[in-house]
Amino acid sequence: MITSRFLRAIALSSAVLFGSANAAADAPKDQLKTTIDTILLVLSDQSLDREAKREKITGVISARFNYEGMSQRTLAVNWKKSSQDQRKRFVDLFAQLLQESYLGRIEAYTNEKVEFASEKVKDDRAIVDTFIVTSSVDIPISYKLEKKGNEWLVYDVVIEEVSLVRSYSSTYKDIVMKSGMDGLLSDMEAKLAALRSKETEKAS
Amino acid sequence: MNSLRLLILLPLIFWHSAGYAEASGVLAQMEDPDASAMTDDGDEEFTDEFDDEFEDEFDADGPPPVSDPLETMNRGFFWFNDKLYFYVLKPAAKAFRVLPEDVRASIANFFSHWTSPARFINALLQAKINDAGNELGRFAINTTLGVGGLFDAAKEQAGLRRKDEDFGQTLGVYGFKPGMYLVIPVFGPSNVRDGIGRLVDGVMDPKYIYLDEKPYWGSRAVEAVNEISLDKDTYEAIKRDALDPYLFVRDAYMQNRAGKVAK
Image 1: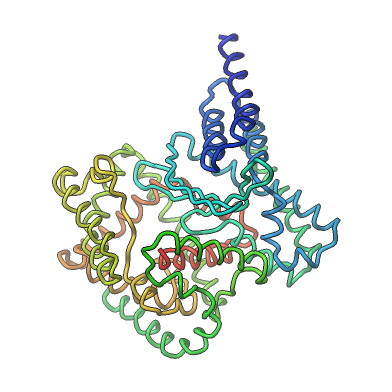
Image 2: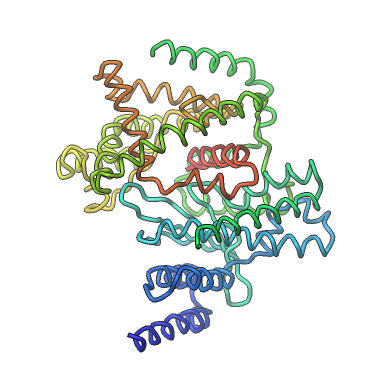
């Protein structure tokens, strides 16, 4: 039992480590697939508890997502107006918020299949279309990626035509207009704290 | 209940004619006219998509504003629908979950199957011949192999996936702007264009044509509750994650519709 668990852990971590190294020359679809397959593998791994799964998945996602690119696009004009320090804090908070929502959602879809449809590449940008196949509907999810070095990194996720970046963008813009950049940052901190406290409630 | 329909319809028409001129100015940039034009050429569409993106993200100051002059009223109805969801629909959906998921998936398939004529007609009206053929094929396969629509054999066996087409999208393809955002009590987020679209699609629904008033609304309630029972708490997640759920739902709805019109 312990050995099989150990082997699994090795297989898993090597998939994450070398998977991305091997995928370096691959197409965006293959790289994304490696990431998503790894997440699904972690989710279905009975030997890991919830906390361990979350930790592993956070690591896998962070390696494939370009949080700075997402932040820049989400803040749009307000990015240019912000100080270096504000930008840094925003990227950090935004990454954590996205991870919290993503983890919260993906746990609901543990038993579903992901199908990879088409891939479109133009220069160093790409769109990969996928579907989450559930018992009644297929949910279309498109990933927008850009190439950084040898890696294709996600800078937006479009679920049923709804772009993550655009959705956050309009809400955040409203808040910055009303209470400034520091107001937004403290709102985000409060939200994160609220999410985390709900999380501990659930875990205990 | 017919008076309820009228109640929704009348203000829609009024708002549409009154609000169209001013709303169309603001919303002119909401949808790219190129994107809603039908380009069957994949490459061209692709270039547009990327160029749009580039513009969106680096030049403009974020997404275009949504016209929402009735925000105060909309927020009121949003609050009402929120309560309706948590105190009526969700408990009913949880009770529905005593039925196995397969059974509920079949119920959903069945309802979806018989609105196929409306999707077919709308695909034709938009001159999407391939999509119309797809829908016709799906209808034929699912009526027969799918046992009257209980199973989605067309997707499983032939790889024909359902593509949502409705009259709101048809109007969008014809160049109608979405108009102002509306939250309709019980029915949820909409806008002027899609509100009209819903009424037209509703009339093409066999349930509306063949059922009397009570069975009609009963079947619609079953359809909605069944759908919520299959959903994985999407609305709960939005409420949990969004800094302002009203704004999130509004923007998500408008994006979703603009995206569907463009496809």
